[in-house]
Length: 231
Ligand code: ADE
Image (tube, rainbow, N blue to C red; front, side, top):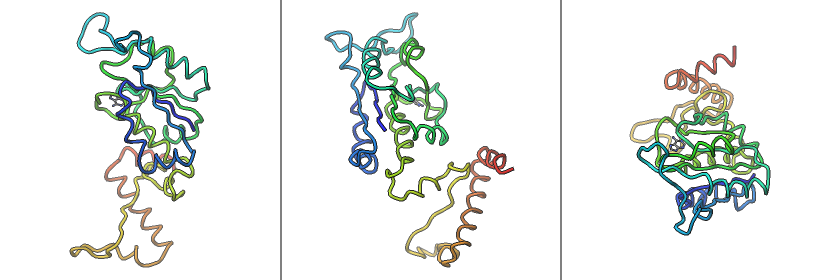
């Protein structure tokens, strides 16, 4: 997979991709992540990339020309399965979207900033608009890092334990059950007996029941989807 990210604040994206699992995925050649600094495509020597909004109002808007220059260059080099704009008014990210995108070959992500981007960028280039939740961030970079993380961990070879991503919360519209590790007792708090019984089938059943209970209690909306799926 190849992921290109266009950003006015590329340094914000350095850390998430240069450590741990996402770094290893790149080192293994499973994914190539390229971050493009929008200022390299600015319209003048002052490295201008934004401007005042027509009609007035507070906040600067990213101009179309630098984005178009960068996007046209990338689009001429390869075909993208998705050209995504990170924005709080996009569709809220969920596991199903990440699952679908984990099968894509090339993804292009544009991070918004300031008051947003000129609407003509969205009209001309964008195929998917994604929000990571109903709150407003200072820009799309952190959202892009969340999106990329959620996609990459689903690609075989990225996480060492292959079954692990499939048993995550949300994968089958159920939240994951509680997990424990050593010590078996801490400050009077014991690990449920069943988990140290060695009874694999019973452990499996217990985990499933716990998943159901947790989902019912914490996310009744998801539980309804689960019930719809099994009926
Ligand atoms: N940019 C600003 N807020 C955002 C959000 N909630 N999701 C994605 N991109 C954003």
